[in-house]
Image 1: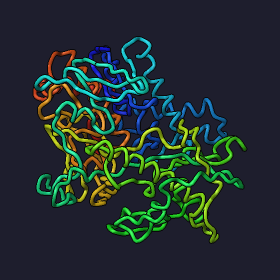
Image 2: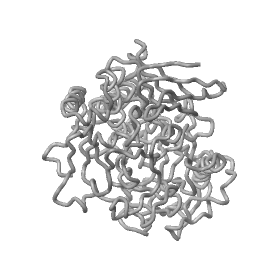
Image 3: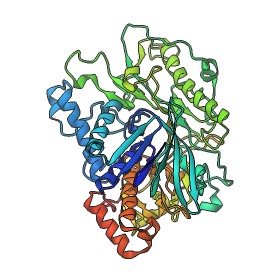
Image 4: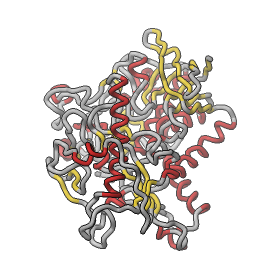
Length: 523
């Protein structure tokens, strides 16, 4: 079966959804494919509440991202029995999790994103194919001519043709299939000039993944799951960077290298930031008395970061082994919490801990897709490095500004344990801009990255991978592809010809995409 559109977007995560929306708003037709049965990526199928910067309520994101946040809050106010004070709170945080100013259920994010795309699905500009995995790409020189996806459960292959292809897959799956130049894992310090890069490059030293799950607490009940197959391994596993088992109350201290710190699980009146409230998505106290049996929290902790091997750039058998290992680690963490986790009263285990399978729409209670922090990354016309973002390195120079900036973001350079060396870092940074050059492959003319696969180093990826930034990257990439189609030029020519660059940046401004930080923001 062969289908065509003006633009094909591969991957229905945040970047992919916003790329498709931008294309449709530009008056073109777009096909969006997604591997799972939920669009929305990090916020839905991967179950990761947004990590956001301190200015997010006022500026520092696209207008559509701000619209998304407003719609989430409105959804709770219109459909949930909130108490009076939270109902009237303009900055309602449904879960009161301390990772974000807006912790919410994945299903609510799914509903809101679907609603944002719905008008353009109705008029035929957006077509979404769920349960599709990319398996093939046809190329001709510096151009991709078509891609083929396998429809899940049917064995049917569908070939998609377009003028432009946007790779918004979680692992940059189009890049190897189309022969597009890319990098993975750790670059060498001699190559990037980054102080925190290793001496020797290692393409397989890739950041850990996490299989998130949802919990509530049924006081007085025994909700213990069956003992996971790999539990004995995981309950005794001690990572290279610790003297403590991975399944313990000790986690890496972001403020010190090779240091661990003990953390409290449940609120105890003393510890202000316990793990239970870290990514809490339902704070039962905000709703009518008795409406919720307990809070609901999402578990994306250091304890279920999986770093025993990568899930791409390896043989299929090894990829499946590590995907299973990540699931087993998360299930083992659940079982440990229920049976062996030390309690403040000297006892062990919280049998009332309950997997909320309904929250994530799965049979085993784990998210539909693992959280992928680090993708294959294009070799780009411009590559962002630690030196462009690090507060220590830039010093009085402050925020690096780009004449071709297509967006903004802010987050620390956060590298989770890697698969070969277990390297990690947490580097204070300045707010950053997204240069258009980082969206342009060095050779191929009609493919654009639309999520975490832009031209960054592994270390710079530590901040450019966050939800508001991925959203912005996808949206800007969608407008860029549409602009190229409408004007009959390539994205490289958009950047290379001043009148087109100015025209494109004016378009982004009209569409509510902030491309520079205000002068008063020093970070």
